[in-house]
Amino acid sequence: MKYLYRILFFNYFHSIFGFYLGFIGPTLFAITLIGFRFTNVVTIPSFMALVIIRNATTNLAVSLTQLRLSGFFSRLATTPFAKPRLKFKFFAVIIIFNGALSIFIALWILLLSVIMQPNANIFANVNWGYTILGFILLLIMSLLLGLLIGGLARSNGVSRIIGLYLYLLSTYLLGIVYGYNLINKYAPAINIITLFIPFDYSVSIIQVGWSGNVHNMTIPYFDHITNTTVNYTVGLPEMWIAILVSIIIIILSGIGFWQTFKYYQK
Image (cartoon, rainbow, N blue to C red; front, top):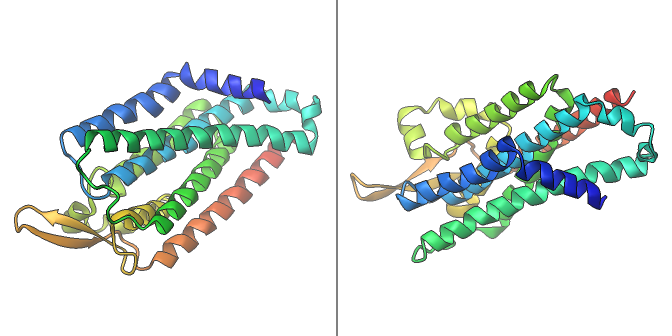
């Protein structure tokens, strides 16, 4: 299996779509946001969530689509890896690689934030229980959705487009680029639209857990005009709803992936 890790590692760091868009791009974006102070109380955890979505979903989906369309899995069926135990190990390697890569880049973004804002106590109001739970749910969900897209996409292009759409929708509608203060003031209907983005629920757990009120699902934003702090909703009424829906999406994604690849192995 170590050879498979080497192949995955080589392909990622020699791919413009993988390395440059999955690591270099987010790094430069984070430096710009933090360096020019285009930030709010949830920018850092939101951006960490975003790089997980980008790498665990989009990168995994594209990699799996390439393997499937190349006939790799058909050839695999004629080898000892066709045995259920070895097939499980094969997919486990792919999942572990992409999961570990996503965690590493998310922690890299966090390290950059600490280095560039040494005097900012960014961990002052963190509820570690909900924050870690949100990241775990997001990572599992992202990996399973990546596997599902990789199993359904008819071409590499389709896989990339679906992954990028999910990534861009998450970027602009989940309080990452445009904060919930702007969304609730000028486009509150977006809170309804985001209910159809699967990552909305786990990202909301992360954001509220990091620096919000877990009892009413709000996040404080400082209003520079009135010099007051105002709480804005993330669009979900209760924390348990966000957790429950995240678990349901994970279960459905897992079932969908399993059924899809059972079909392709016939």
